[in-house]
Image (cartoon, rainbow, N blue to C red):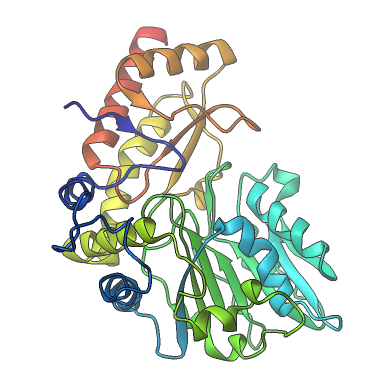
Length: 361
């Protein structure tokens, strides 16, 4: 079987070893006589998977004891609404750093719940960079500061995070969670859809500090209250069991590869191959993101004209490359290099880019 060079932005590449293990256990899990997709989420076997997955997250990410790890449904889009529903009280202001499309979606949902403020924005630069931390201005009575740590569309990423004092820092890490070491204690809440770095779509990880859970209002539906899921151990309603199982396998894969620090170095080695090809092309290729804001997860770049980009996409697809077309809202080209994208795929892309320039430059 020839594997595609998968640069999809999400759902995205999964480790081949994980897929092969899941294949072996697909029909029957642990001698149960059934697939994990068929068994009750109240069964002892599934509860073991649920609990172990949360424990692995704690171990790999260094999550302190005063934080809860939740495995929920609804993707980051549900969290856009759940966060203000839980924390944006009438006397507070939800503060957001506007870095692109995903940050914009988050603040749009918050505006339906309460008062919001843009603490900093890079809109004047067409979201090709992360605002300087010194430009972030917290409003009075801020309920929280929300950031999107990595913007998949523009290909920008926070290199460091703002210090917010007593104001909880909340982060959408959907596209770069577990790609680099993070001090979880700096955040009040971290959330991430799984379909980029953690597993298949269907499960959303929420890491939330205990004192924030205790503030869950009793005036919103139980399914949207964080304390509901904490008390139930992420089993309040039927979980996306197969997706949780796959995340479990991915976490074990990360641990076996030396943990997040080693994954981070691997990601840097991978993306350097492609960024160097762009930077050394003499302008044939040019990056969209400002160099200091470049993402290790989504490499966005352009060619000199749209017709040449179409030719690039067509020829790359013929060579087995998948997912290099830029987001429909901005166009251009994008290579998403999440944790499971192999170094070999990035090397192959760099070589293809060099050959394409040679033939079309």
